[in-house]
Length: 401
Picture 1 (spheres, rainbow, N blue to C red):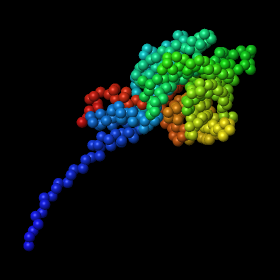
Picture 2: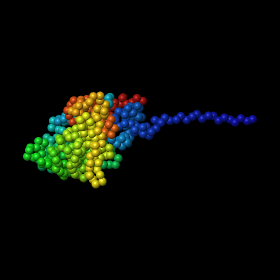
Picture 3: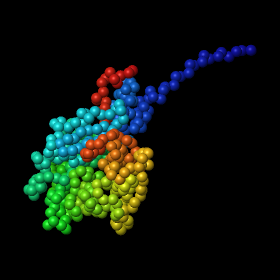
Picture 4: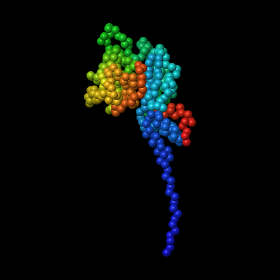
């Protein structure tokens, strides 16, 4: 009986670890939250992970995947002072000096707007605006439109800065080298109109500056009820239109269509609270919304347009602030205020007593950001800050293997 020779057994092939695949690791990193600490933590694992996390092509994919940049902090703005306060969790908070304007803001300069990673500052003494990129430090000085100066208008009431990059796939939040636009708005009369102007509707002027051409557009104008707008009311960008609330007890909204280059005046929701405790927001369907405080409650409105083009405001939600914020005690009427709207997060900043909260409007989830008794304007600053985080690290802190 013959015996067949047994073949020598082949040693099992050692399976490669999934994380040894660069493409797969990139796909995992792509799904990390957009806040700076998460990619930072991944990058300090090893030299290889750092190389993958800082690859420019990957960072572009990372921004496209997330679409909206995260909230890094707020600029607190008063006349002659702009300071940054990070809202990231410790120990990843960005030091205030990292985003300090150099040279410092002067007493004649006012922060008008913060959007798409840039800050817009008015310098009425020199009849100019400054467009400042806090991450790169780049400053662009733009003189007021000559048409305004010829009309004797030397101070603007409000303004907006926004990225003008229309390339397919561009995601706002890392627009450092992208072209930008500046929109300024002013009216022809001072705030303290005398009795002789009762019933008079002032004219509001707008003009758009393009960094591509280096020129201002012709003046666009309309008449408005009430007494104009206040620079402290930051515009809200919804789609391709900027919106401002008209000041004080007015029931009107000023709208500037960037594409049509036209101004229009529309109504606030009927019955909605008047005063400063309200903001234009983006509704869940991508249209115009309205948020207002009514006593201890937050009201959320949507503007619906029917097939005939008729707009109607609909009250969607009324919720108690106490429940949203998870507070044990009742909130007194004069102890809460809406500070601003965070476009990229679809959230509002609220001050309740001495604390500042962020409330996401879709989920109504809240987060306590910081304590502050300072009476100033808070302008949210959202941006992808991956490059800045990585460049600020010391090599010895990064390399562990």
